[in-house]
Length: 171
Picture 1: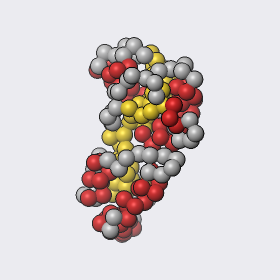
Picture 2 (picture 1 turned 135 degrees about the horizontal axis):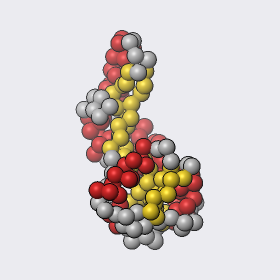
Picture 3 (picture 1 turned 60 degrees about the horizontal axis):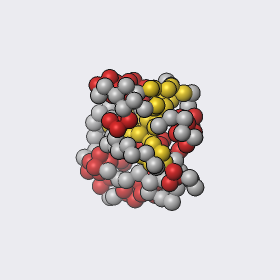
Picture 4 (picture 1 turned 135 degrees about the vertical axis):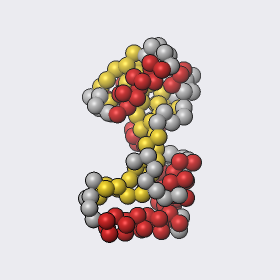
């Protein structure tokens, strides 16, 4: 597979009940944490748990939705996933009952996957993206999809850098 310039950059964060005093993963020492089994965040969570000696009780569940329901019903103290997934799960009338905390625990660049070997097509896609980024279309589209009445993910420095300096960093 070939990849385009990065189109979006996000990362893994933590979702807790709004009443939680936790501000970062380090505040969840000894707590129950839900994570979707089979996701890349399982290994990340186990690594963070070991590095920071957090002694978390890690519960691998069958889906992101199940992990979210466990936070909502207070069966666990928190869940871990990529920020857009957390924001989408938490969208809706009860959004104020949970909150996303802490710094990104990983940085995840996104790009468009393409068939390998069609260099002309790949260059065309990259040029179109670079042109859109330079016209600020990307920020307008970002705000449309990620800063609206249903979901809010701030346009952070990683995304701004992705648009200012198009490239295939981290992929």
